[in-house]
Image (cartoon, rainbow, N blue to C red; front, side, top):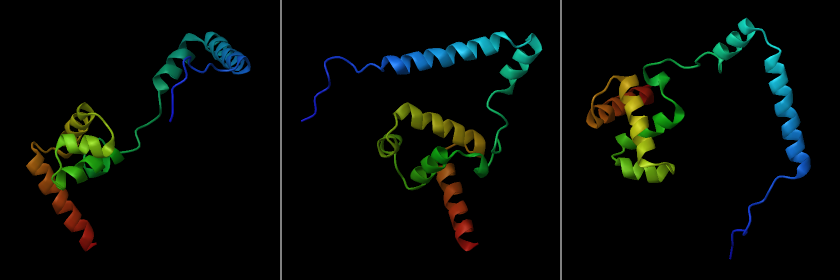
Length: 123
């Protein structure tokens, strides 16, 4: 039988030292930036968006899976259990899906998903 340790494992001193060195180097590198360079770095973020903002191609893989499960007739609670996420996360995915696909109800979403699946199976 598994038992949690009474005290949490701590990283080794070598690992802590390595992390501290990297953090210190990053801090020093940031301090050396000019204001313009620092602003440019901050604005760069993660890079450009790789998928469209709307439409089927705009859905994340998880959003697409939620759509598939809605079309299969699952409830939000069932979807949450199947995907190992919270009910709130499923609701958030559905809000994003409704916006991206410009649908207003689960029935409209299920209909659109079914129509799309039929069209894709023909090609």
